[in-house]
Length: 318
Image (cartoon, rainbow, N blue to C red; front, side):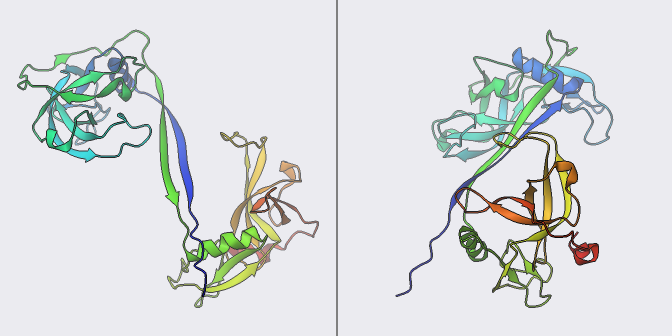
């Protein structure tokens, strides 16, 4: 009886903290949240946009006419979130809602604290629940909560956008958590790496060997099944010098990250170059893998001691 191959699964996190400076409109909006003040911006046509933007989405005109709107509003549409993820506004099930605040003509996306989906409806009235500690971010609005009221028809109030200690920049963390399960081709590739071998797959049409394999040729669109062992040595085709230290990566800068065409492969893969001063790495340098302590993958590549490869032997892989 043939044993069923193990299904590989692993948690994967893609995270990038994006740092940006703020213009006068966004600065006023976020600083206003810190001060429990909701600001929008008025367009030339008289529409009030919340959240405010710096340029009119219809005419591209610069916008600076700030106005204050109310902390109450109306739900325009919603979706129930039964299983909140880490970092979301609430830890218990809640509704994502678009709320048109009183005085605004556009809707703001945030969370609504509701006990169950039957308690949410389009057209329901809500109000802002402010966070106990506020720092000048959208999270200063903890969430919305149901609020029995009638829409206020008072016009938005002009606001000069001036606050003490204005917020001038933010760090917006972008993060994606998911469980990755490789398919047939990549499972075979990972099992081969555990044996200190690198295996690709050959396209039956163009005959290129792709490493890592994807199960199909990206050029011809044809399924690939023929496995081909490549390397272990290869040639540096292009490279860059990294001068910024990455979070949670215990590698001193500067270091070199390169495209490496393994012998027999039709595609260059990524790898770090070590064992040589960073300013001596060059195109055509012949390298070999240095395996990780657990032997499951190449930790980096080092010079193999061979003469540099001729440019004509790798120019098609640039």
